[in-house]
Length: 318
Image (cartoon, rainbow, N blue to C red; front, side, top):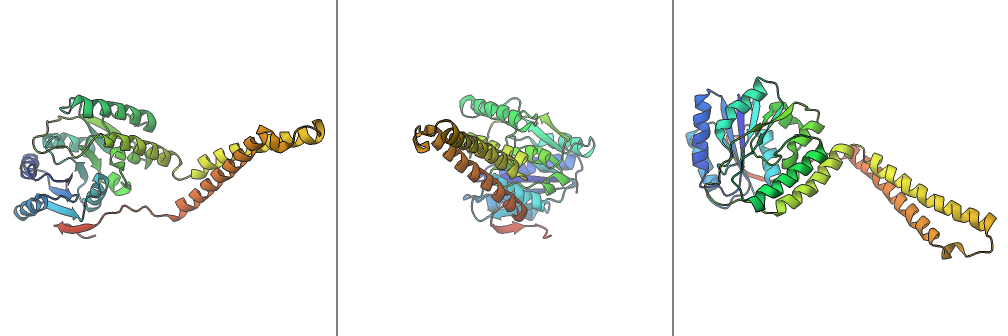
């Protein structure tokens, strides 16, 4: 199979048939062997019924339905797990991503040897205040923090070599940072392609301003995980030793001063350096223990991405 197209969705009943027909035209025109995986992330409208009808008329359509809304990262994880194509394309279901971009993105992966191609919506049709400006600030911070030089981390239209999506673990709200996860996993041939962005035709966006707040918090998480995730002792242990050394230094100074220099001066407990010493040593010990426990957890835990599937259509069990 050439291409797996993964489409996470939530209450997109108006656009599904049009999107399906558009994708099928592109696939047939380019003679691709393909599958379309619709991941219904707990829709409350008739999206799942429409997916069932599409699957009945087109055997290349597959569907996974979540018991409730678990989030885009979990939907992508389920799609990645089920995908069988050599190149995996992800796109949104709202018709803002153009399926005509798929053949060129496929060529970049299959023929040019790239491992991940991210779409770049250079010209956007979203609100400047609610989406464009926050998105630019978010992408700037993501580039500076992650070291991955992409202009649009949030673009849903991406292409992956199969090995990439079978290697990385997408959990929590980390779907924005799949390129960062891929880089951390050792996939270095990452690039971007300018793609056409279209105005939303039906319904309304499912994301609000809170996604940018969550995005920055996730950015801090991904920075820590990618830098110290496998060696937390290197961060917490170093900070703990530093704090403990500062506290012990103050304690040593107070002891020498009281015994040898000023034995009849103020009591040690009356001097502010005593409390600085005490707090620094306590914090240092706690940080060191946090690093130690983190090392134990890293070596014992297994990554888990949690979601409950209630129905599936045409999904091959592995």
